[in-house]
Figure (cartoon, rainbow over the protein chains, first blue to last red):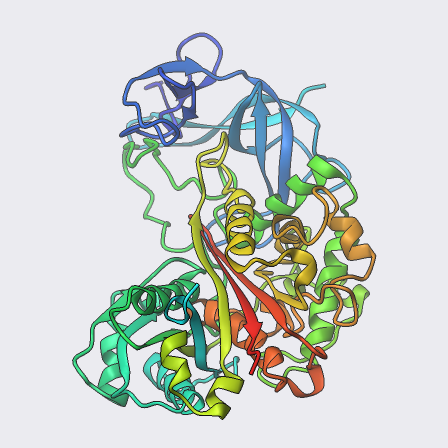
Length: 132
Length: 403
């Protein structure tokens, strides 16, 4: 086993429980997931890395049944409110139909394997699953 | 305000939207541009500035290509690109040049060849499976994220924007969104320039192929070919023109372009609400009119889920009251605030670069009393709205000439 690599650099796998991290503006507290040049809200340039809550509430979703070539369907795309931080993620481990997915449902972070490269490194993705 | 501060649309034209397999972007742009010149009663010799937009072909220099077909007079060209607000941006660019007093007449042209383009916002990211995972890009991603971390395709993005509204205010359902589409397809039957003029039953819309719940295929904007162009001048110039030109001229009471101000979550799911609300508020203030003064509205119904939120963003209803507004019948063509009597992007079609001028053309057509079977009687004030993801929002308020 050659170890694991996260799908994106804001997914942390090897520091206790898997969780997401954000760059938080030291001045105004705005949170971002990408590499930053400055804060889009207050233009400050100092950021600290903070953990994002692993439980949240579905703020909105869609069930995608027609996607670009190579993207498996159906899948549930959503925005999850994790204690005030908005996170874009798929909803996983849930039936992708309007009877099983609803706005306001409680969810928690979950990870899953995407594949293994030629050196045996396993890629790990994330989504949110119903918190029952 | 002096006459030189007033902006008028002197001529405007849109082509038939739909499939034009034998015409390229330059042919379509030329048809709209020469039509607008003829409508205005001026020639290329009068035009002092040209703003041109064709989003999917943004590096082609459309403006210069167009000049080579209809008149190379050496005037400055601004080739603009601003997502689905590209046409409105071209119009606003021409307006700014006239308003600055640099030119007497400005021309704006928007065009797109989009028939058969398929799903937008999700292409070109598939790469061969890497031999060894290697993080790349601003998120350090080791594989394409579309479909793994939400969706980047437009139907799903706008579906979430609609369901988010429902989550916040209640009152929405799959059926409600489908009914909005039913309205626009019904309206399109009166518009000979629409790409599709077919009325659908609610059942047909709801049972059509699901693209991204709750948007079925019939609830998505129609990719098609088309162009639109407008000629603008100021009030001082207009005074020197014929009675007929002054009678048909349409006053641009407000011309506004905004982008999305920072809000929490706006970089996770595009926020199309705040920048539209800001543009509308500024436009109403500039024009000195309110939502209740509007005789008709053309708004950016790129998906049925989008139309709903813009009732609220354009303040056509109370905050949170968009579902109730629709259920009251208000946005039907015989309602209190007719919305998208052209058929909207869902049936008239959405050739991206042309859309922001074609919406203005629709309003002008009614204000001039030239809309034929679909004329909104005694229309005096109208509003045209477009939004491009990223985001950019254009709002124009238009008023009938008092002559």
